[in-house]
Amino acid sequence: MSLRIYNTLSRALEPFTPIESGHVRMYVCGMTIYDLCHIGHARMAMAFDVVQRWLKTSGYRVTYVRNITDIDDKIIRRALERNIPIRALTDEMIGVMHEDIGRLGIEPPTVEPRATEYVPQMLDMIRQLEDKGFAYKASSGDVNYAVRKFAGYGKLSGKSLDDMRAGERVAVDDGKVDPMDFVLWKAAKAEEPADAKWDSAASGHSYGVGRPGWHIECSAMSCQTLGETFDIHGGGADLQFPHHENEIAQTEAVTGHPMAKVWMHNGLVQLDNEKMSKSLGNFFTIREVLAKYDPQTVRFFLVRGHYRTALGYSDAHLDDARNALKRLYTALDLVPPATTNTGIDWTQAHAQRFKAAMDDDFGTPEAVAVLFDLAGEVNRTQSADLAGLLRDLGGVLGLLQGDPKAFLQAGAGLDDAAIQAKILQRAAAKGARDFALADSIRQELQAQGIVLKDSPSGTSWEVAK
Image (cartoon, rainbow, N blue to C red; front, top):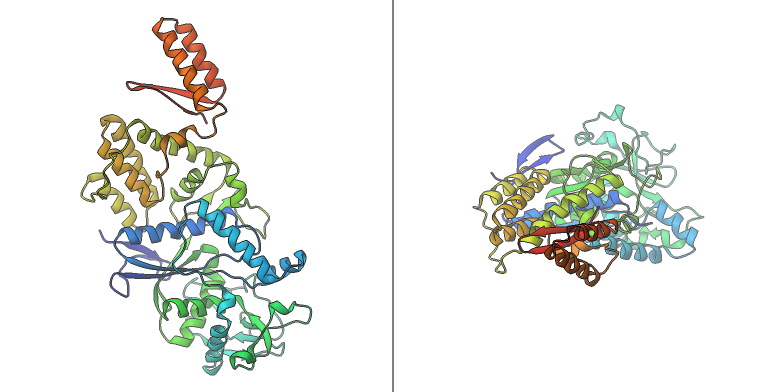
């Protein structure tokens, strides 16, 4: 089966063929960086990390663009609160973001454009929209997009204009012809800092001093980095409207042809059945989560759910992810993979099932189920070749690449030497048929969170839940 992807635009699974043979161009809306990233941001980055990994595994060359919004009302406010330049704030937050998502094994995109680096291109696009009759100057000094001028408005979200409401980042004011019109260029306010303003005249335009609206950023950056039409546009489900709807309206009004072939949206992380977000104050930063759980566990938690489904967050879910991952690492610990790595044999039955799952809209739940079936076969057959396949298939998802023993023993209160001494003492007691002492040693270690595991090859240990 060839790769099929659920296209939000058509609301159907579609066979995927890139526009350019062998080359996939993908744009994903990234973070607005005024604070630490939370686990919901990690879910988005992880979803498309898995997508680009599978595309590469499938033999495609991938140009993956994930943008950064580094100018925004929230960014301006935070910089003023901290009494630092906007660039100092955004540089700091970008560095922190790279560190946090990097710890989760999320690979960097091919290109990571910053909005502030593309203001001239945004102004050029605004001028084209004005020339074509899709944009107008408001009495406020802003330049707005006239949504009712674009016949296809609403095709992504499936809503009619009369059913829609302005997005949270769009300020509705009297300068708009229609309440649903959105801002392309915001006229500067006197109280805003100098580094939050651009003089449009420097780029040959007459829109005065101001800054770009949110939506025009991605239209300009995607066109500049990937071309006017590209293969995949992705982002969180909360961006479907108004952000992605507005991107389509802007871009297609200028170019006259589809912006992206496929639109993909990942499900959101929920806390107590409510969307996790900074605006609601119900979020956990990636750093907070990694202070309690190791990166592999957090990655597994994010990967094993299908990217389009909502993901419930709780300590119980992460504990369950840790214990499930331990089962896979236990198989690799008991049966070390063969040292020679000749690549994945995709004709092997487990590999075929894994591929079929991933080709079905990046079906990670079914792919992870294959890993558990394979771990069971490794335990049953003691096959080093199957252990190698388990490790390699896990690697496609960014999993199972660490040292099994180190993972299983992480967080132990005693060091390995002390535990090994207890294991030897227990073995001696069993040899002397002093089973009461042997049991007491096991119980003593268990009370300290150490679980002993006996096998024909000897006794190993791991940290209990």
